[in-house]
Length: 254
Image (cartoon, rainbow, N blue to C red; front, side):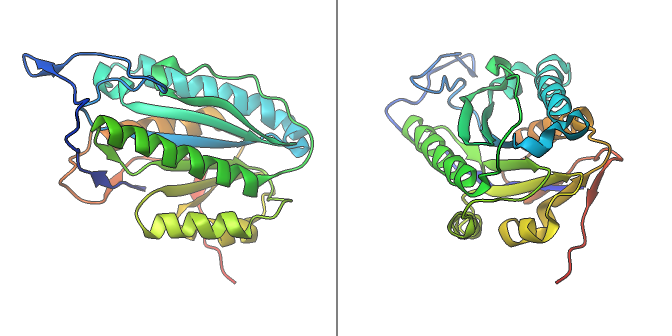
C-alpha cells in the first residue's frame, strides 16, 4: 500500500540547533516540546469518533486499546531509532458529542493514550477544522525553529458520518491538500457512511477496517509514520508499507 509523503526544506533561523560531533543536542523548545529541531519531523493528528454509536461491539474500548498499541509499537520497536521516536509528533482530537483536544502535539514517546468514552452525535466537520488549525500552528512552530518536515497527516477514524455542517471544512481540507499542506486519511469501521466520507476525503485515501482490529491498524500507522520519517526527502512522493489483512481500500462509485 502506498503512503504518500512530501518533504519540505529546512529554513535557516536564529533558533537553529547547534550540533556536536554531527549529532544534534536534544532540547525542548517552547510549547509542543519539539526535539531534535534540525532533523526532519512528521506530524499527525488523529481524529477519533467518540459518538454514541461507538459503544456498539465495544468499538470505543477497542479504539482505546489501539491507541495504547500505537504508542507501545512506536516506542518499543527496536527498528525505530531515538531520532525517529522524537521526530514523530502526534496530537489526538475526539469528536462526539463535542470536539475535544485530548492531546496537543507531542513526540510520540510522550503521548499519553486517553481512555475515551462514547456518547452523543458526530461533529466531524468541526473536528476537521480543529485539526487543520492545529496543523497550521505546528507547521508555524517548525518554520520558526528552522525544523524541516514532511507533509502532516490527518488520520480520521469513524463508524458513521458527520451530523454537523461539514462542507466548509471539507473544502478547506481539499484546498490544503491541493496546496500540498496536508494529507487526509479516513478509516471507516462497521457501517460508516462511505459516500459522505468520499465527499470529504480523497477516495484513494479512504479505507475500511474489518473486525474492529484497531491494534493492527495502529501498528500499520506507526510503521507508516516511521517509514515516512526515515524516507529520502529527495526521493519519490510515496513509500510502500504492508497493510494488515483487515484493512481494505474502497472502490467508491457515484
